[in-house]
Figure 1: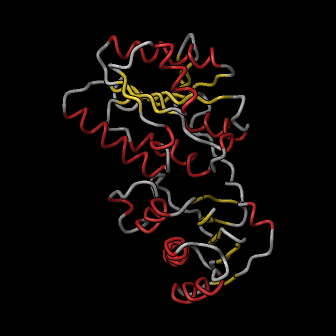
Figure 2: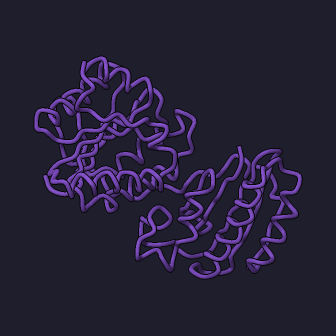
Length: 301
């Protein structure tokens, strides 16, 4: 193998999880390869017990490593860069990506699983992404098969024939079932900032949250007006503690899968604001539907 080898694996019991992951980790240790485990607490405990050794495995707390996609990419790129510079020819990671089955919004993690095929391509990284079929929704499992070039089982590894298939449109936020508090067509960023500040005055956000909401509104309307196809529709929904903002234009969205997730040369002039939102807001969704290309941002809880 050369470059990034990205594979998914599906399991339906604790024993199945161990049958997939223990040989993967042990083979890496025998080969002297840096080996990392970034799983939820329960599966980390299962692996620790089955391996019976901690000296050569680096355990990364899953909730920290996968707090948000942009942070996970930055962390893994830093880890792989240092290890590769030190002479590592293969690095192994068992990474348990969060999803709605464990209470985490999915769309930006689906984009993460697609984007890392490019974001990690320069590194000799072998990433095994196990998904528990007992808790993972079917639409997530479908996205997983579309984003992983390889599939592993307890007995073999093979190319994934469904890799690269087109994703369905991201799901709307539950707040979007109600009537928006704001609906503006082709507003200027200044108009949006003023309108959002007034609209969220009754929402229980701390000072940072209120700032993030206003900043996010300004950035997504700027992005739509600058890079989208008009008219651009801006909308805002809110409940007592959370704000959802969206823009929809009639374009097809950015072609670069790293947009918003990595501040690369390609995104410095066409997506740096979106990357900042991925680093500060509670959730960011981007994708196309029959209505056009929508960027959706959630602030608060």
